[in-house]
Length: 219
Image (cartoon, rainbow, N blue to C red; front, side, top):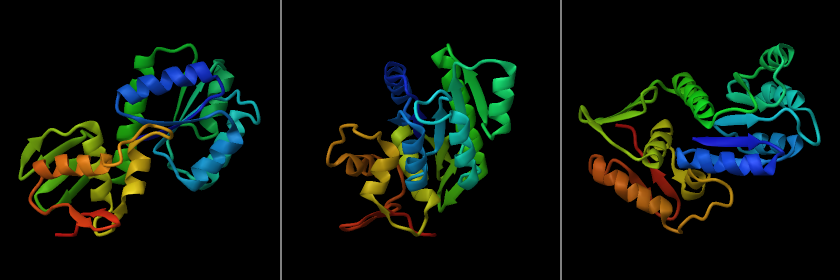
């Protein structure tokens, strides 16, 4: 699950990145609203965490512009503005949730998990191809009717492939969803994840398209 963190406090952003990555989120950080809007337009993340007090434009305006073209993109406002009027304004502008600073990281994580489940329900409550199925609300994979455990990145990789059955996913596109900007990635990281997935899935379930990427064919 890829999170775009829009926050001008660098030390806070670094702490959040560390905590969220520890929970398996891929986190990209930007300090300004204009660059964030450009990033969302180019490559939409799964969830946005948005501070309102940005140096170049007000976070509420960033939110309004996001909502023009990304109506279902979950946005959680994380800000020091904590009056009822501020919260009402943020929610009326299209925020899915509002958390005032200071906050406990456990509460932020819980709220992100709610948004993650809501997003999964909107997209695909269940994904099934052959003997493999994912309950995206429970984040549980079943193979031939048996629950199988996957690491978070393995689960996200399988989910991306199942959401795009019949379409080839390049290694670069998979990396961009699984890892944060600037994160040190082994040259064979995707291949290693695919290898681990194949050990838990039916034979030939994931196909390699040589020189391009990977796909799951309709069954």
